[in-house]
Amino acid sequence: MVIYYISIAIVLILLSGWGEKYLRKKFSIKKRDGFFYKPVTAFQGLVEWVLLIGFILIFWKAINDPIPYLIGFFVILFGFRSFMEWKHARESRRYILTLFTAVPILLIWIAFYFFRGMI
Image 1 (cartoon, rainbow, N blue to C red):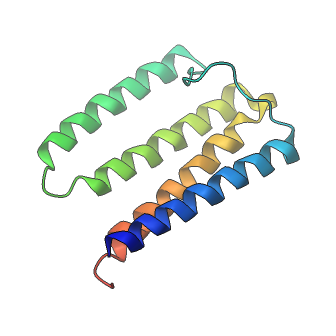
Image 2: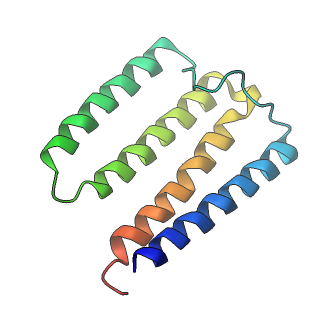
């Protein structure tokens, strides 16, 4: 059963990489400078820190089943990032890639959380 989940995650990660490469080419999106993400505005950085602290507090309380909270955190984080990029840096089209990053995470969450009792 664990191998099934790992194989689903690997397939989704590979498809995500190919999809990101395709979107970069189709929409002429440049790679960003540096390895770490830089917020578009100071407000975005502050909200992301608040989300992270809130997640850590929830994670600390949800020791029994933390995976849904972890995946939910990433979906909310990438959704917020894509909204802020769309609102403040629309011409760079980075929001397309950021939103696309949330899709495989959401699919992995669905596969792990909702279908874990079926296999």
